[in-house]
Image (cartoon, rainbow, N blue to C red; front, side, top):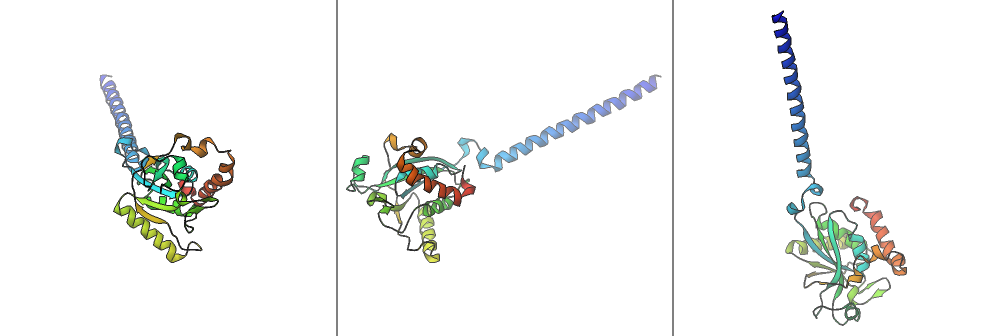
Length: 226
């Protein structure tokens, strides 16, 4: 009788040990799987490990440009402002006079691991008219000119290469005249210009001008929409 009880005890212990090892292995595999996903997916990386880059683009009224780039996955911020002029800290009224030389721009911080600079430029060129100097629709003046302000030699070369490719393949009916210029001091526009479309979407200009451009972006770049 004691032998039978001893054998039963051994079998029971072996079964419990096997179950514990199986569960332990399962939890370890789950841990590795979660860790691998976090390491391979940029969206899951902590902010401290992400490397953000900056792009500054002028494509007409900055309300339109801001509204488009705020919707792109991988873009952290899109801030309306002024660049390329002759005076410090210009006001909107001064820029609109056309006398300061500033351009209405949007400065974008983005994660190149999620959205490469090349894709941002593709969105930029395909959502405004880069063939007409100093004008976008009814908005006319040097402050509305098409321009890429580059922050590195790599950005300069990339912008020039894509511009040349567009002209070589005749993507547009006329040559692309977008300027490719070094970035200078960026001046953030007044607070009421920030998040303009989000907060004033029913305003007549937004309905007539901004919304059609946003809808064009959403149609052309479905994979980039948040």
